[in-house]
Structures are given as C-alpha cells and as structure tokens.
Length: 344
Ligand SMILES: [Zn+2]
Image 1 (tube, rainbow, N blue to C red):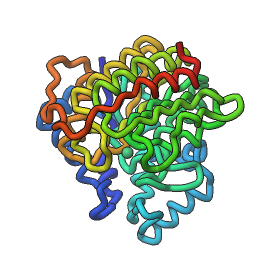
Image 2 (image 1 turned 135 degrees about the vertical axis):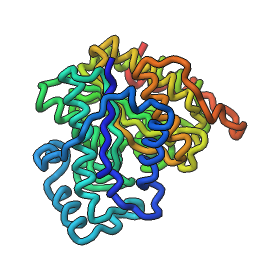
Image 3 (image 1 turned 120 degrees about the horizontal axis):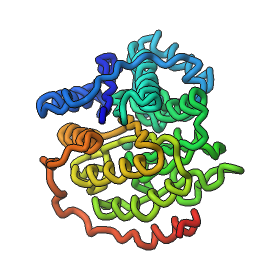
Image 4 (image 1 turned 135 degrees about the horizontal axis):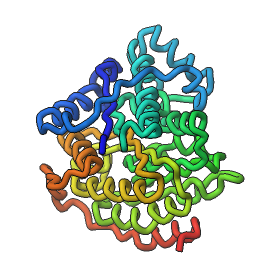
C-alpha cells in the first residue's frame, strides 16, 4: 500500500517574514518525518507547477495575473492577513500543481493515497481573490482537474481545518458534482459556513456546513463524523475524496479554541480512510491547509500518514488537552444539521 508525499523546497520560498503561516511549518513537519523514520516509508512525489489553464478551472484570469504581477513587483500585503513575496507566485503554482500531481497518481493507481505537503494553503482563496493566507485554492483546483481530466462526476471534499473554507464553498456552490463538507469553529473567521448555506439551484444540499462551538474535542468530532459526514458521504457515493487538512483545531494551536488531540486526528483520518475504502477504492488525497503550533502540527501530520500507511502503535506526544473549557453539547446542532440535509 503506497502512500505518496508531495514536497518540494520551493514551498519554503513563499516568504512571509514573521507571519504565523511561514516556512518553519513545513520544515518542522519534514524534519519530524525524517527523525521518526516515517519519511522513508512514503513514496516521494515531485510536484509540477499548475498551468494557468488549470488555475483558470477555478480562478478568474484577473486574479491569476494580479498575483503574478504582485510577485513581479516584489510581493507585499494583499489584505490584512495575506502577504506574499517575489517567489510566492511560483510557490503557489507548485502548491496547486502538487495537489494536482497527488490526485493524478492516486487516480492512476500509482499510489493508494497521497498527502500534498504544500504552502501557501488554499481553502480561503475564492475564484476572484486571495485571502486568509491563501493565494490559489489548491484543493478546489485538484477537484476541477479530476473532473476535467478523468470525467469524475462525484467528488467529495472534506475540510476539517478549524476555519471555514469559504473559497472552496464558493467555487462549488452551484456545482452538484462536488460535495463540500466542512467542520469549523463558528462564529469565527472568515464568517461564512452557517448551517443554512447548503448550495444553490441544482447544487442545493451539496454544501454541508458543520459550524461547531469553541471547545469541541475528540469526542465531538467523532460524533460529527459518525452522524453527519459518513452518512452524507455514503449517500453521495464519491469517486474520489479530497481533504483540506488543516491542523489548527489541535488544542495547542493558538489561532483557535478547539480541543482536538493528535489521537483525535488519528481517529478522524481512520474514519476518512474507511470511507474512501468503502466508497471509492481508497482514492484519497490530503492537502495541507492550516496548523500553527509546530509541535502539534508535525505530530498531527505524522499521525495522518501513519494511519494512511496502516501503521499501528500510533503515539500522541502531546496527549489530551488541559481542562480549559466545559465540553459543549452538540446534540441539538447535529440534530438540526441532519434535518437540514435529510439524513436519517
Ligand atoms: Zn485554518
């Protein structure tokens, strides 16, 4: 069972200075994978740059040239949160291309599943603009590529980053061939992702938002996966599963207020893998989004890869969260979402 890992040092050249989304994130992950010996269990995948035509499957031409021109001028701030450098356009092409390449090898059966260890991240980038540390929407582009290249008609995107993937939602809001399912802290940045946002026209029902109160941990996420995500996914019968894998819901992450542990990620990934095995011959592609506590991020990505490889004896070096919140009850929320989406 081969598991692919997309990585290239070009991702470090997206220079964001002192920004929380910086090159140290990938360096921490890679060195942890090397030190623990996990890297040698993986099949290395060399990314290629996405073409402008591929970016255009999701993004407007003006947005693409805006990013290209900003890089030529040396970079700078695109909005209050999002900064780029002169190499960021190239890095972003390789980030989207990395997600594409991972999808290609999974579709061709060269690897069973793959993880695209890329930056800049993607899920906040909308068809028309960069935002939330994201320039181009890597996962959305990979999904459109899979539709265009392989004629897939049912693609599932699971987005467990602690923030709502507004860009991905927007890209597929009218598209019934892509089921977008997101768990996120709510209300929170970027403000979108309420239960009532379910898709438009024929795509009504193919956006499933699971807006969670702060303080949710392993138990709540397990409940959500079992009671909403798995049944919604099985009903949709995906041919490919893409995952916007953000790890900023770890309890040690300072950007948000969730309580998930490394063991919790292992359980989530196990559920996603079983879902892929049961619905689409295991075709599964992860692409990195957020995650800002370097120790938690590195351990969580390693755990994800351990589960994909079928390794047992998975360790959680950070353990369970210190008591910080009263655990919120989400039973009522789950019931409401099941009603909105007619899930038994
Ligand atoms: Zn995030």
